[in-house]
Image (cartoon, rainbow, N blue to C red; front, side):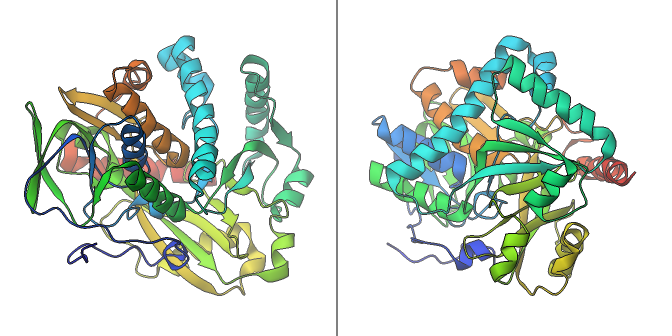
Length: 429
């Protein structure tokens, strides 16, 4: 395989330091053809490539940097149930029939992750369970009502309420008024999962090209995908770069916006982990600007907290995230911070994913809004179905309402800062 020349290395994260099976893929030189071109080698693109190749299609994946370089290799590694918005919201937004379809696909996404790990022998430290801490007393009744709603109407009986005492025992902190436990959610090492998908896709026959930045997509038959070092001609293209796809499709830019999110990893904590999350579940809370955390396989606290809306990261990134961690775990004030990193999370106005057929042969899947481990992987499979002729599930997502960010591409950031500042203030009140 040819060495990379200009592609950026992976973020200096705990995940990159513990990556397994890292390999280098060649760059495109000259013109090539395929049935499908996928832009972006993250969960969506690699899942799409794998599922298309298994169906016998020729697939090219064009990645500007490295496989798993973006959010897929940097995120919190949490596998959630449901969609990013709850079922009550979805029933009002799209009707009960589509809401049930979206719930079923979300449930399938969790099983898909497990199946891919088992089938392809992906070593990514998967563990079961996720706990949500309720950070305001007045949210308790609302959360209990939703648990009852899912149990009664959707038959989801593996989600349960936790008292304040049970939450304290499960999470090793007393800052929450209660919580919920989701037994079939979970967490994993996201970069190793992405690398496993890349290996599986290549073995199935997909061609993955790194250091191959797409600069334009020209509609037509075939679609032409222009890169810095050659042109790809395909029957269809899937834009799957999520928060790193700006400038390729104007309609997507208007509806999908990247914001920066940050994570740290402490030193290995040894026996102290038994006092933090004794059940080894993932954890998050009910804040709009969510705190999320879990323990790594070698006993580190991986804590995500805080975000910003500029191209630049905070000057002292470890300190920026650490202050969020200490509000939940003041007992970790003496823990050394070994890694701190950030990356772009792509959000939409309503926090639901943006799956669309933009024009004949041009598809997009993006905007997972922090819910991407299961949703993005499932979206790749759903696109493969759509290309093969079964567009029902893709169209279910495409019927979701999608608003443009106010102000267009250049003024959307100020409006987002104002909105997020208001929500952050609401979290504190």
